Length: 276
Image (cartoon, rainbow, N blue to C red):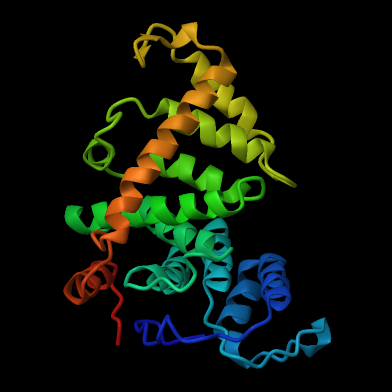
């Protein structure tokens, strides 16, 4: 697919691929039966003849949906190096202004790539990590805003970004509104991940209730956690997400989270990849 140590492409050029083909190609990536088949598909991706699958697009295949599909699959199969490479290719669509997928269904894939990088790799710079965390949150939340009943993966990944963030003490600096208690956010997102249309994450409802039951005696919003019903806690988490998203969006629109050229170079250098 690409040179192993280079990320030399323009994220703002048009791929020109039909939306139906994007989903079908993503399904082909996810259907790879083992690491060998996945790696072969990845390394030859731009040269493959997909006409036998009814896909006749011969456009540029640089698209965040493909990179997220490859990256997440490589993580499942344990190839962290190729996962990192694919996820970085997907994340670069959202590092600099403008993100051409911001008002698009595929903003979710950009957010997913960023969040998976944050959760699985060492960024090395707290300032860059903070910006990346804000970008990931904004992109995942934008997907939820656009398609609130469909984005089960955005809800779940946003919950995991809070739950498994590598620098928990960074979260309060991002979220001064309700800095220390993350549980309502996580409960809300896991609940909606389980309830979204065609969700494969039905088990997250059980996980949300386990976290809810752990809140006995903890003061949240002026009363003990056990004084809230489960749905009241979900509602509280949703309200807090909406407030945080509104605040971060103001900063996002003021260009406070995009990385400058020097920060992008440092970001990729710290992950042992170069841009050119």
